[in-house]
Length: 122
Image (tube, rainbow, N blue to C red; front, side, top):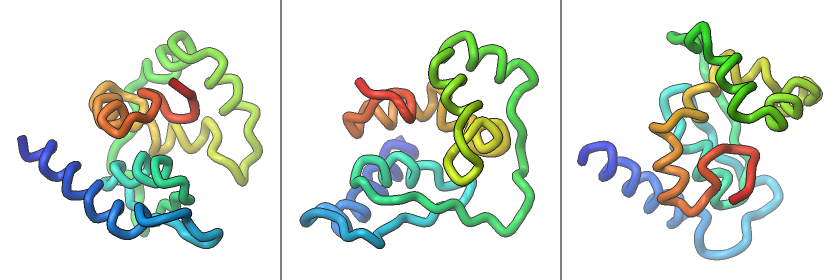
């Protein structure tokens, strides 16, 4: 219930900022590694998401994560492997983004009417 209420509040706040019309070219949302709701909200409101974290990532992906990701999302895995370094690429996913691709965040994305997996469509 706490998570649900927190997410609802996050959505409400961002909707007040970005929900009144088209976003401007320079609009963005800044998040840290613990505020992953912002990644999906930026996607929902079609604004850039910037990650700012002045510290080392305090967690790492499970050792089997890459193998499972590649099996479950082969085309996305290939896309991320080939992405240029100035775009989101596999290094970002394995370094800090991997939780966004878990079931915990899938439900949040579905609640927002986004695809359950980032970088894919419904």
